[in-house]
Every structure is written in C-alpha cells, then in structure tokens.
Image (cartoon, rainbow, N blue to C red):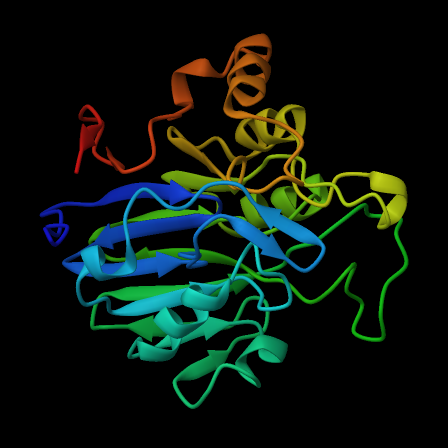
Amino acid sequence: MVILERRPGSAVMVLGGPTTVLDLGGLRIVVDPTFDAPGPHGYLTKTAGPALEEAELGPVDAVLVSHSAHPDNLDTRGRAFADAAPLVLTCPSAAAELGSRAVGIQPWDSHSVGDDVVVTAVPAVHGPEDAPRDEGGNVNCEVTGFLVSGADVPTIYVSGDNASIRVVAEVARRSPRIDAAVLFAGAARVREKFEGRPLTLDAVRAAAAAAILGSPIVVPAHYDGWAHFSETGADIAEAFEQAGYSSVLRLTDHGTWIPLDGSSPSGY
C-alpha cells in the first residue's frame, strides 16, 4: 500500500462523492469521509467507492463533517475514520454523537487546526429556501459549510450540502477573498423530500455561485457515487461553459491533486 504523500504547497483532491482532501500548510484535512463499498444505505444507494482507501491517506490532522444525518456525507467507514482522527469539526448536532474529539461550531465561529490554519463554520441550507424549517431553523437537517484559512494558506470555501444562493452571497459578503471554492453539487434529489426539488446545488446554481464568489478556482464535489445525485460532471461542465466560467472550473478525475497555486493538476 502506498501512502498519499503530503503536498508541499496547497492543494485539493476529490476522492468521490463529497469526500475531499485538503493539504494546506503541511496539514492534511479530510472533508466528509465516505469510504464504504457500493451498496444500499437505507433509502440511499451508493454506486461507487472512493478513489483512495482511508488507509492510503495516512495520518490526518482534522476531519470536517458537514453533517452526520445522511450516509452520503458520512458512511459507516467514514464514521470510523472520523472517530480515529485527532480532531473533528462539525455542526453542534453532529458533534453530540461523534465522540469526545468532535467540536461543534456555530456559523461564523472558528476553531484552529495546528498553528496556522483556522476553520470557520458558515451557514448551509440543505434544500429549497421556502421549505419548512425545524425548531432550529434548518431545512432537512442541520448542516454546516466551512471557510478554511490562514496567514500563509489560501482561503477555501467548502459549501457542504447547501442549495441556497442566498447563503453563497452571504459567505462572499463576509469573506470577500476566497481563493478556491469546493462546491457540493449534483442536484441531490429524494422524491419524498420537498417534491423532489434539489437538496444541493444544481449545475446552474453552482455556476452562479462561482460568479458570486469570484474565486479563481472552483472544485466540484458531491456529483457522483450515489444514485440520488441527479446531475453529473458533464452537466456541471456544460453549465459553466454556458455561463462563461469554464476557466475557473477544475473538474478532474478523482484522485487528482488540484494545486491552488495555478499549476497543472497531477495524479496521486
């Protein structure tokens, strides 16, 4: 087994589904780990495994979990991976069930990872803006996005399962410098929820989000690997082409490093 080497600079790698690796300032951070083999997960069905197994990632410094309520963002092996991590940052409801290393952070609160990286929770709306909300004001369930930043690393926005352009605009307003955006797209749909309307960004909204954020690098995730994702990478590429934003899109094979310094992507 070959352990994935840490990038000397800053880079992003999508493994499949939402699972994304961030190498920043010598740290390795994994977002929404999902490592199960294909198969049923209750009312959801996983159709493909990740580009790398969890053991191939080697030691990690932190895991970011957008929410724990849905297995397409945290499956069985993903939970075990998070349990073994030295630090898990997530929304408060997920922290309550993810053990002593899990820290729940409210929107716009922050937590340090190492000496140089700060993770700030940002809002996310997991469904249509006009959908009914629970007592906590959440659509579907509580979800968080993240801003990852530091003095010597790029600022990265990770949307989490968010379908709201209003939220994207709020993030852009409160953090005017975003060097890269990892957008959970795929227009996830479950027929029984909100009349089948998207629970995450569809391709057109992802392109609109890119325009609002003004980020020079946009990395899509969460668009394949599960049967309820209704749009593909090809749909995302077409929407960005139509919107005139193809130059910022980094739609690569899973398991490919996407440097955040403008250099060319490279395989692991």
